[in-house]
Length: 283
Image (cartoon, rainbow, N blue to C red):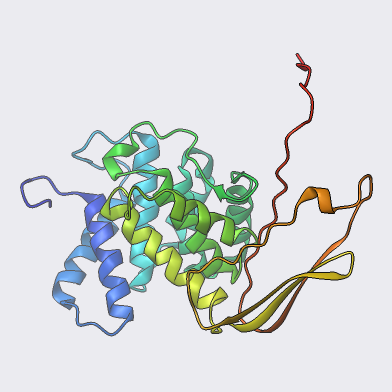
């Protein structure tokens, strides 16, 4: 129940059970009697087809909620393989957020086929830009009832991809997009905060295990043009500009980037130029 409501909320209950499951996994004390009652309630909601949702949930939100319930139950070693299969069969009717919760549940269930297929579906939905990447719900109608945002969905997908696969090729681009989505120094809601920080924590444990202690070098046509030493963690960005006028005209030039030492190197390259004469319109 919400504090000011008499109506039971399956989504809120799944969220609380998920949060307490994470806390329990970190050795925090959790009231087992309360958890048992919540688990019984969630199991009854999961297995009923004629659920009285109490809220105006459409089919997508209902199925997304059941994916959340399935995952939250799995965190407490409560499994329902039959309903896992039913939700997987209806995956085309479920939001990206719901599919991701189903992926996380499939990982706990050790169902490699479901994991592989759900990862494939999610990866096909990624929206790429030159330096960033993110995910968007195709149909978010009604999802305001479960506090939807593309930031939350993107963060959960990033976290799940790393958690279930151990790596994610575009992880740093998604991190950059998430950081850019802050308004001022924060995200829009506590929901976004929670899922983004969970994603950042998962990313850090996998990709930032080593404290930076390395030298970075960039070579243009085998000539060293950048040399920077990184010791420890800091937020300082090192920049180097090279005038186009200094480059040989009409020649394709090779660039090599080298890292010597431990830690992860992040780098980007840009070419900025302006035409000397007015360009004709293409259309």
